[in-house]
Length: 277
Image (tube, rainbow, N blue to C red; front, side):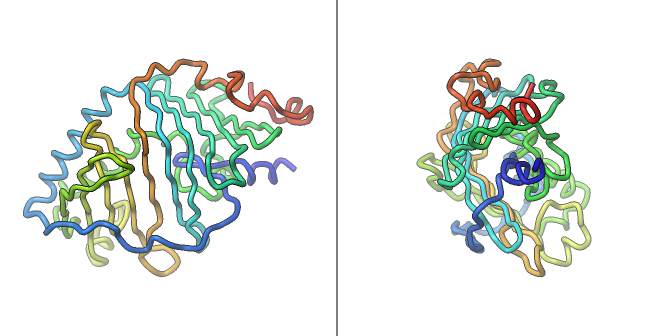
């Protein structure tokens, strides 16, 4: 019984709930990028530095989180209201789409609830370790990776690989000005060919596109292509819409007893056996 509930509730890059797959789509770029740069490592270093400095100023943030992850031949789309806090690391998510998941929400707060996720679907509530096999069954990232810091670290890690071996980057193109979720943004693309990826196996993917909100200097769109099921395809797509930073989130925003949340509407079985602390 608990396994069935877990499969119905758990989600990630946070957190993703696998239900009602969508046919694979978004295989190609929607950005017309400028020519490749002569010094991709130096340029990427400067871009990442700006994002890291902007993120250091973020104490908390709210946004609408757009998520797609390739799973078993499908690329299901999810739209989630998200709150994140830097210290202690905390995440709250409430699903907006698809319709079948609109009665789902999760909370994770470092050091609370035995460091486990508190997840709700309808009247059922349970706790689950973020990195457990069941929690990660259909997801590429645990909920503890939600937010801007982990997204920026992905690019910083690839940058370090490029510094050690510049041939790992075939090219970096950009910036290209785009409107992402209505915000003026600078977009870049990183790419390596198959031979270079084989020599640099720790690169996150074969190709990545990312956009940076000009007003906040935080990433608001990330897409990654990698080898899955025998071909290079879009495997991750994340977007951050209506980003608001330092809004003054408190412990109440990451507490299942918050009356604005639905965790209190749980049945007797979940309260006795599966509830959160």
